[in-house]
Image (cartoon, rainbow, N blue to C red; front, side):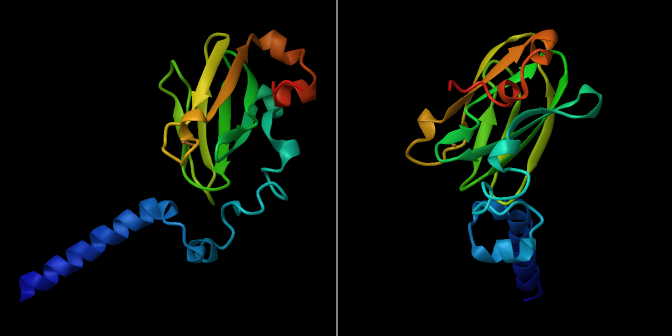
Length: 173
Ligand code: CUA
């Protein structure tokens, strides 16, 4: 009998541990309720806060630091094309407007997950100029295989000479 209780308790603990790390895979409104607005609300992402359209893409911070903000959504990355300088640590901040996506930079081992209600942050340095495809590597629905962004790594001086609007995104206009 004691063994049985122990087993049930152990299973419950395993379940809790799983939930605490994978809660974002289960889309229940109750998570947003408990989340208490810590992360960005996927529904109002485009309307207010850090991830409004005018704040997306690459932005230069103090001391020449660069932050890239992106939204992953079925089935695009917003912005679809970003420019960054080579040889500078770039802080990526990404969230999702719907389900879980994974941003990966082809030809590197850099990648980061985008999940609704959370901001994933990682800092990567691209040593040399070049172009990288950004395919989504987490199955996210019918358009998953077509979901890919584009990263344009340019020499530092070239990035510095870009206008703010051109820095934000390299999407053709
Ligand atoms: Cu987004 Cu797969």
